Length: 339
Image (cartoon, rainbow, N blue to C red; front, side, top):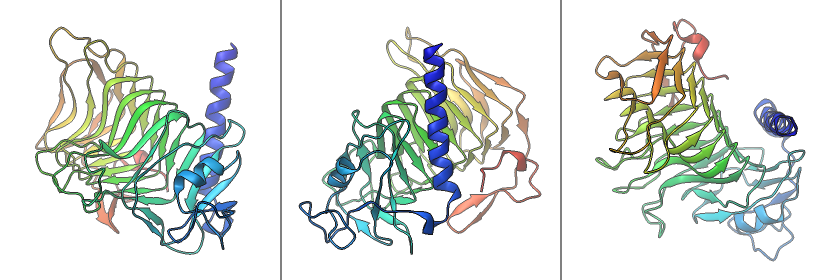
């Protein structure tokens, strides 16, 4: 009973934090500490004397505090950060009010020591000049209850390297909500990259994202050890595959639920799976009440998942302003990502 109450409290806290970030205007952001490319880590972290690195910013923030990057800023160095909030008071890193999103041009990683951190209203890219060129994802989320919200993760200048947009690596109760995740391997033909590669994760929630243009990878890949996670109301368009389930020598995707998504214009599969011989096959994975429409692709292939009450109908997605949306006349309009 105590475990169930704890899970409920954590889920409520995450939802409250995200609703605040998504529902408030940019002017509602209160910046407790700052970092900027012209800063110095021995500074006080104020707007006029900011820190230089995100590592310093994240490590200095206390629960209920927000760290800001100046609007329009571009951070060129990839960093691995640790931030520690609480269930009652998350730590947030975001763009300051008053302009375009700050961009982390070479992505970011969190450590397993991270707790209750929200990254929101930021841009993320991948740099072809980076010494970290061969990392597995532009954004790597580790730790407990990390969240990525209202952000854009794209290809940047990266070429000829396998890269996913977001990787979940030893992560518990991650939230990925309201983002645009796109083309993360689109400039690297023949190299796999997913929109979200949930590698080692439990109870992730992937909701209301637009995921498109990963031409050599899947929009959402649940492999090898992803458990009890949910993907809901995502608009998934123009990827090699929509949903993928897989496993490893001793583990496989288990108990995941894929529901009320729009999965369309895939190059090869809408939903598929693969497991090596003599290894576990996924169990309890359910794909239900989704809109599926990829005339040139296989709707479902493989084992380890169940297809239930899905619809095959053209959602009539339209492109504009660097992303996709469903018009009000779409037959899948009830499935579209929330505003």
